[in-house]
Length: 253
Ligand code: FPP
Image (tube, rainbow, N blue to C red):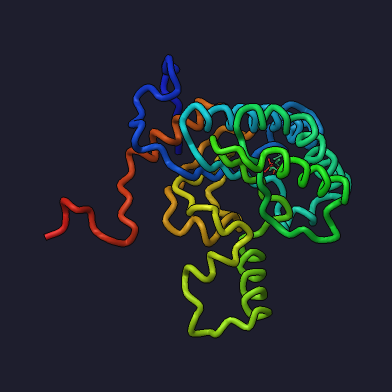
């Protein structure tokens, strides 16, 4: 479990190896409901408070030089929540995009989405997703991917369906062919997977892309998450030894 340093560093990069920054960080923004309930507020107030955490995490990613940041905004399973919470989240996500896409654009952030674009997603939200993609498509500092109506299993189902529909020969199916059929074939594998709120689960997020991720969990609830937590997660990541199924060079005979 992640702990923040007792004294906050003067710069976010203090104590970090600038050459060891994870290229792709994925965040499960969990704990909004509990944050609200602890304050005697309705659950949706927790989602609203999560907006500031998201903006701060993006600023942290930019300051740290993280090239890809992917956040789980709404899962294929979240449709099972109470109808008023689902309705709130649809409207809230649309508003967040309307409020912040110009600022993200000025920051050099490219906004992308992964997930199913099906009839359940309100047209007004799809419109704001498309506008955000279009506005920011040529930015190169950081790619913020918002997983919306997303499930890792659904992504693999959709990839298999697409390959079958194209008539791909089973002998031609390999790792690269599958990657090519994921929602964003350009997305690199996840280096660092962060989940807030003390839960230690993947919860159907980026199942393919987390194959060799380092997993970091923090007790902080998402509305309390700030760039300092992101930097602390990167510090923890830099303490890990990544072997990708092989051996460390020093350990090899
Ligand atoms: C999980 O907390 C969080 C969500 C289902 C939604 C998170 C979405 C945002 C913070 C909005 C971000 C906006 C954009 C456009 C990316 P929970 O409700 O599961 O919390 P709990 O586990 O305490 O109940």
